Image 1 (cartoon, rainbow, N blue to C red):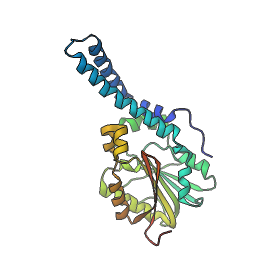
Image 2 (spheres, one colour; image 1 turned 180 degrees about the vertical axis):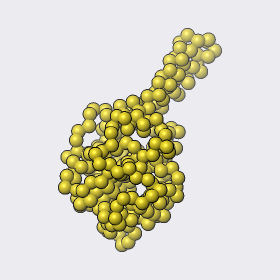
Image 3 (cartoon, rainbow, N blue to C red; image 1 turned 135 degrees about the vertical axis):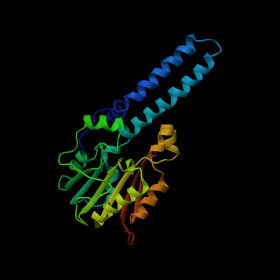
Image 4 (cartoon, rainbow, N blue to C red; image 1 turned 60 degrees about the vertical axis):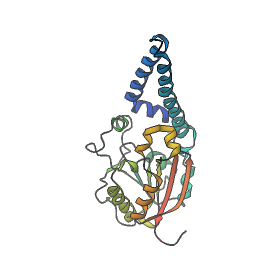
Length: 254
């Protein structure tokens, strides 16, 4: 059973890793609120409208984030049962912030778990990832890997590979395909790769407005999987905002 998370840990992590954004938004809201209450009468309606347009998307985003990461069951991992039998060899893939290795080590205590992190400080310069790494050290024994190089694993050695909210950080499409070819290479013939992601779609636009552009579309993911020699065996909507793709090597359907 996965270790318990603290109440509202998910939304709290989002706020503290991105506090500069919320500080700037709060400052702008205070200025607009001041203009709405005490500014020139001609500006007050516009200030009030801008205040609403600034606050409502932010509050909606926080509420949806709390739902996804704290109340939806995402971290109970019941959705991972679609991957099939308990794996003997398990690979987790992260991009600087590993939320998956420790829970899966508890869920699959008899599996040989290898944690791989493709974070590169020279290429992944987001301040939020840097803050997350300071708050959550890497899982013990994590291997630093490069998405442009071979994984340090023999072919066919992994029964289950899980890329949890990480693979979207590979921004270049060709590099993303090359990395998934590596995952395909190390996957056992009957193994499964699970890719869990937000998508660049309407629900995520409503939740995060222009922030949804940081995600890849479903069509982009499907193109990546096809080019890497993987097929979608199952596709699960964990929430309207989170999709899990269960991938297998090309061959007869299960």
